[in-house]
Length: 114
Image (cartoon, rainbow, N blue to C red; front, side, top):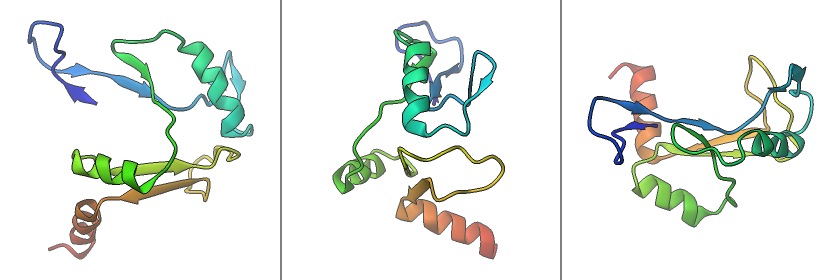
């Protein structure tokens, strides 16, 4: 996410890192472990983090939430299976990205070239 920090004088762009997964902890590969085991490790690592480093919230996936995010200008939502393992280099069924109608139309135009 990028934007101007409301609590600082404007000197340009402020960038915030929003972490949502931990693929390695203390040099130990966590990718074969399910997300429901990786997430608590990330929460411990980032306990109390704020400012430019934040932990993404975990929300229950409901249509009303998706609709509210789209209305607020987000491109879409991503749903993740809690028992899903991280797969490198390819898409997996453990993640599902639900795009807004505008994002789907934009992507179609890129493919078709209009």
